[in-house]
Image (tube, rainbow, N blue to C red):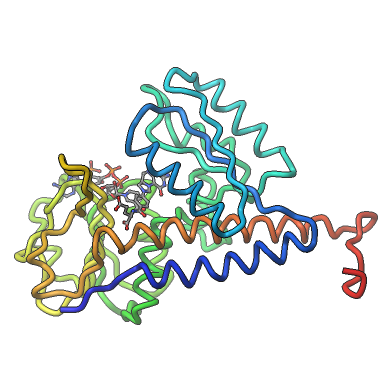
Length: 294
Ligand SMILES: NC(=O)C1=CN([C@@H]2O[C@H](COP(=O)(O)OP(=O)(O)OC[C@H]3O[C@@H](n4cnc5c(N)ncnc54)[C@H](OP(=O)(O)O)[C@@H]3O)[C@@H](O)[C@H]2O)C=CC1
Ligand SMILES: Nc1nc(=O)c2c([nH]1)NC[C@@H]1CN(c3ccc(C(=O)N[C@@H](CCC(=O)O)C(=O)O)cc3)C=[N+]21
């Protein structure tokens, strides 16, 4: 069956972001993303580097604020609060994992909603669930965008999401409901996973267990989105979906599927936040120059 690549789509998104960042620069605004990190985790460090590199390529300035693996909750909260108040910064993300005992949801509450470009503030998830405007977590948005890009029908279809995390499973379920899909969410206590997933027209695997979703979990002709990014011993990357699934279903690859789209959407959210910030300045008394002056 077909491979639902994310690479070309991610390139298209980045081209759009590049244009929009350049337009902002002409008007004197440099789109800026701050990544707050407090971990020695190698995978997290790789992800932060890849965000910084991708940001630079599209003309977004990326500040990595590394507080070290010994950072306290108070230090993290203070950094996030300061970045939320800093007019030069348009997007703020809090990288996981965090030092032991600290809660992402708790700390991300300090990221002001308009800069919450990875939808980590629980208020953003609440707004999403309530049908209000909010940034969705970039990965959840990437799942839906990738399906729409490949013209996979969602309205009236049964979508089975495996995984119920705050960063992927739950927000993706809300985004799919908004597209009129019938959504079932599975997790580690689901009694008979295959019995549920085989009823899915679309299956989204966001688990973190290599090869968990096997051919027997998937209906012939289904569409499968593999969100998993599991490091292998030899430094490679594998998803949550077994390779044999590709023989009976359309499948997003790992690497080259959801991952690149996630990073591209994070950058798009940042440029959107920067655009919104320049609009917000246009209040009486701080009027922008008329268009013919710009
Ligand atoms: N490409 C990207 O941009 C991103 C990729 N990822 C990747 O996606 C995967 C999931 O990430 P994340 O959501 O943060 O992970 P979490 O560990 O937070 O959540 C995993 C979910 O999978 C469920 N689960 C675990 N084992 C099973 C099982 N045997 N059967 C059914 N469900 C199971 C858990 O259930 P329970 O709730 O009961 O514990 C949980 O809901 C990881 O591989 C991660 O690296 C994550 C974010 C972004
Ligand atoms: N709040 C939060 N938001 C996240 O978005 C988030 C997170 N936490 N925690 C960690 C995971 C991991 N993650 C990846 C994103 C892109 C690729 C990616 O682009 N990977 C390339 C492959 C790179 C390679 O080949 O090594 C690809 O899939 O093609 C990978 C992993 C986001 N995460």
